Image (cartoon, rainbow, N blue to C red; front, side, top):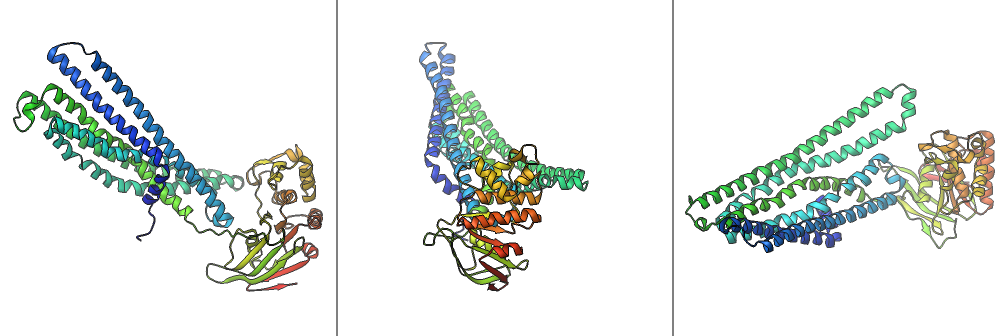
Length: 548
């Protein structure tokens, strides 16, 4: 399609944001080329002067030669520094955009992709963009301008030698382009394989205890090793293409330099009487011979960095897929409603096959009240909570939450991070929480019942995804976050499903205290004890709803 954004266009659009460092890199490269020409000319003049007239007063020439070498080194440093600055800026901007996009997509928008794959995009694929801006883009300009400047000098000295250089130059970018087409395809496939490998490995790590329980540890190790070996083979295939590009360039540049050297040698010996050959001198011949490798050096460098372009194009295609995903998050905040109040106007949700999950549902929840959502499994209770939280947008209707739309959320699979029990509880509040508040929240949620049996109490550490505690204990830990949260609207999905009778009564008492404190509770549950706590019961029954 004409208006479709390709990975190359996407990369070039970001180059406009770092135009300053890129221009500085190119300018430093041109200074470096000028220093190379002066260095070669000065060296050729010194050699010619020493052989033709003997050793004379060459102090000024040596000063110029040393100055040219120093300027060339300084320009090389400045060029690399400016290029790296451009690459770092783009990499940082892309990572910020990725994180912002993942936040905008919400839990539902990223649920289909493994977290390891998303981490690979943010880390490895964003990292792959740096070389494109730091090295390839400035070198692409220098690969045209620098050889042209050297060609002008060579043509001024001997137009036939310049003709030999011009004849060989177009073959190099032609073969680079042909090889590069395959490199882009291989790099794109390589990044996809890396995302799959990351997810494959992380899944095995997360299920390590289960694999060990069923004695599948060795088989899992073999599966990971096989996947890693497959990625290794694909990486080597990409490297072979990169080396092929360099080999093609070296072959043609070597042949061209050899032709120029033969021409200069035979011309100085007097064997060529055509064109400017009879006018060749030791100075002009040596000067041209020294410039011939420098004519191809920018193209050599471009070939070395061509894999940066291929890697960036492959990474850009994967990054664009995330950045262009439509957002499923809905902004439910409405300052016209009091904090904690909730309004649902003809809300309906459908599945991918266009069948309706529930709705249309209209509901008004005053601040400080308690609503319990019931219904058969699959009726849409959890989906309704996601709509209220803004994790998902309704297909029809509108959801409004009072104030700034802040909610406290407790899902059926609560997140537990590697930290202490107290540290996990503090995640529920955006503000600092003192030890007394953490202790009280732990008591209300029933966390103290198992924390006191652990070696360090609330300072006991838990592992990734709650390793070291049971599912019911993880749910109580997440419930304690709700108690330290100051959000006026509290959403709970089956908060008592994994609790024993004594702990359930304790949790229900804590929820009742939240309601008495003016917090609005919306609970999805089949528990009759929670139903008795409710001011209103909403029964979801497919495409209709019943309100008690």
